[in-house]
Image 1 (cartoon, rainbow, N blue to C red):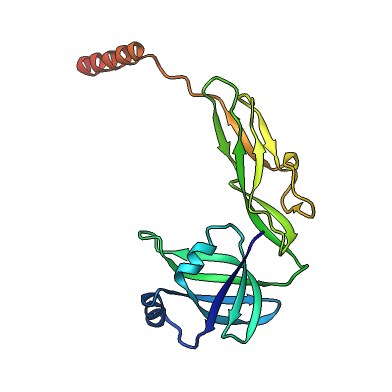
Image 2: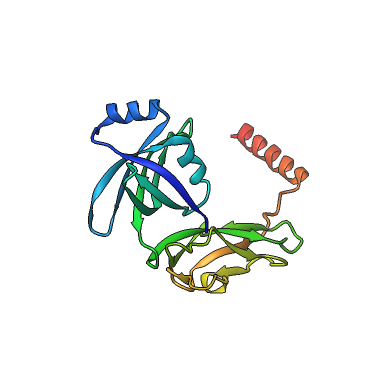
Length: 202
């Protein structure tokens, strides 16, 4: 996986007013925590962070105040519900060689069997355990030719080397639902007419 370098600065101002001032400068307030250390409050560059977060579970190399370097992965990201800009980010401190539990997006590929059936993502992301510097960006699952009633379980998904499931292996990840039969237009109109007649008689 790619590693993104971001310069961060420690901050001592807290509260909504301070957060608004930070965001006005196109920066994002954040907190780095983990490994039993005290949470470290940071200010991060908004545009660079936004680009980095386009990659799920991105590994971020933080240059903090130009003095220390730490590795982190995003744990929680808050966005403005209307405009979508970053409001706050929680970062989890990680070490090279350390195993972490994360959720990896599930990408389906291929065409279902003919018939207009629907593919349901029961799990949009698959919980896995992986080495902090080798977290896969996504897992790909083939649904080619699957028919209604078919399911793909966690144990059916091929994972990269060194990556293991962090969920019950029998958990359903994807399933194929039968197409809903549409009521013929004529029958629907007749049923509506009968309903109107019954209402008039009453």
